Figure (cartoon, rainbow, N blue to C red):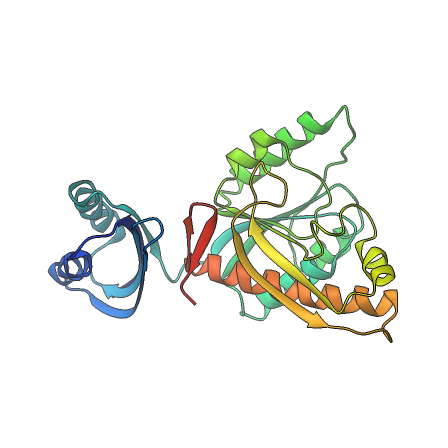
Length: 280
């Protein structure tokens, strides 16, 4: 038996669940997990189904495409046992990169990291220790277009289904964001937009914040405005130094990014306009 994950969305109406389950039954499928959400604000219906099925994925996709046309659905079908091909971007802060690689090595994330891309050379040894190709692509104002073209070549050549910006401190062009739409996840400190720019933890420390945190979201052309996947916070107080805040913030960033990446790799996230539906 093959194990698949079906994601779908369509205008909400009676009978959708019956239609989907009847389709799966007609292909001798056994449903192992199912979740659904009706959004009254948009009038849309979202569903995720994990199921076992003897039919090969090529044939199943053909039949599913016909159903989607008839029922006006947007559907995607995935092999649940395949690790997601991934490329990670990083700059000089390596805490998220290190955390992701360790989780992958430990079997905690269903990723196959095909390449690491960086505008600095700091982590080539870390990449080598995991036997992952490391691509150093420096960026300056005049070379940004050429650098992004090379980066995209690597993403395409590796067949990446997911791009992770693991504290990659470069703003992607609008064109690059569009090319990566729906398959690029970024992580940043939750101080945005209150503490923009460099040294956010210093700014936060000076203002005496009581909560720090992190946000993982999909990348869009609107800087740090993409659909949010996951967020978390940690309480702090006056006794914490800048170094304490930085350490706590980095831990939170790593955990939030790992959860977002895990849910994406398990096809648990559906984009709903400027928001997400996450079937945890």
